[in-house]
Structure formats: structure tokens, C-alpha cells
Image (tube, rainbow, N blue to C red; front, side, top):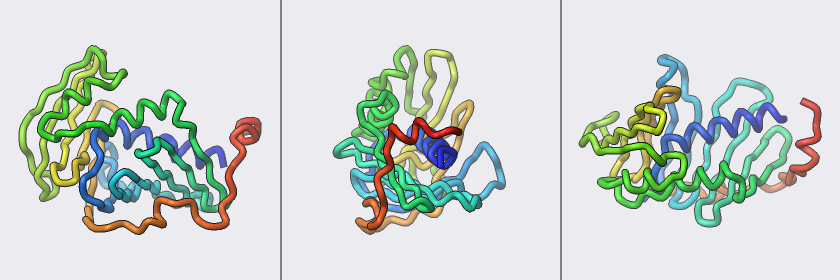
Length: 207
């Protein structure tokens, strides 16, 4: 159980590292890890206005987890399908505050201002590179340099207002098989019969 939670949480951190805007259109997509060419889809993504669901793909029999993020009320819910349980992550945690800050870029053509507002980006620089096409979709490419001098790039889709590609020193990925359309509300809700996990009890379990 702890391994599933850790694996899912790490995935969300990587996603947020390359995400800078709320989507305008609802869609689903597959996330592919560009750091490991030839590897299969690493996760399935569903986006509905101010909500997102990410399902890391794993062949492990103990898998089957998902993360639901609600940006309107700043809550994150981790679903554990095998255990029929769910966990709510407090929005007050530092990771949560950082994560939601990444979703505040309002203008795809001028996203650097919002990038620089994020605390972890202080001392860094950002500039728009220009228009590029990624997997058949029009995007706006940006280049950023953090305070340590590490350079990263991200490509924002003006229609989705969402990054369809991101590349940095330690991570890189892109969205493929993007399907625009209304997403079922049930994807962003805790399934019936799931029990809320006791966070305090979980932390005391032996690893």
C-alpha cells in the first residue's frame, strides 16, 4: 500500500513540474516518458475544466491507483483500487501549495509572468521561444532557466491551455492520443464503496 501511494505521488510531482495552465477544453490523453524512448504509456490523463485525473499505468498486481485533483477547492484525492480505499492530501502542505501555483498561467502567449510568480522559480529566467508544432498540434514553446542554471522547455497548447510537451534535465514527457470532449463526472469522484484512509494510522505502518 505505501509503495502504491509513493509511486502515484511521484507521478503527480513530475506532471506538475511541466504544467502551467488550466485547460480550456475537456480532454483525455496518454502521457509518454521521453526520458526512456520506446517505453509504453506511463499514465492516462483526464481533464475537465478545473479537475484532473491521472492514472499511472503499471503491470503490478498491486497497482490500479489514481490521483484526482480539484483546482477549485485545492484538494487532492489518491484512490487505491485494490484496497477500495482513498486518501485526501491536505492542501495546506507545502507540496500542495507549490503544485496548485503551477496552474495559474492565464495567457498562453505570455506565460513567463506566471512561471516567475512560483516561489521555487525565484532567481530564474523565462522567455518565449516561438510557435512550434508538436504531434500535429500548434504550440507555444518556452525556455526557462532556474536559479541553479538548469534549462528546461515546455510547449503550451493554446486551445487546451495545457502543456503537451515538457523537457528538463531530469524529466521529459509529452501528451499523445489527445481526445477532446466532455469527460464523465464519475472520473473525478470517489467511487461508491471506497473507505477513507486514516492518515495517522498509515504513517505508523511498518514499511
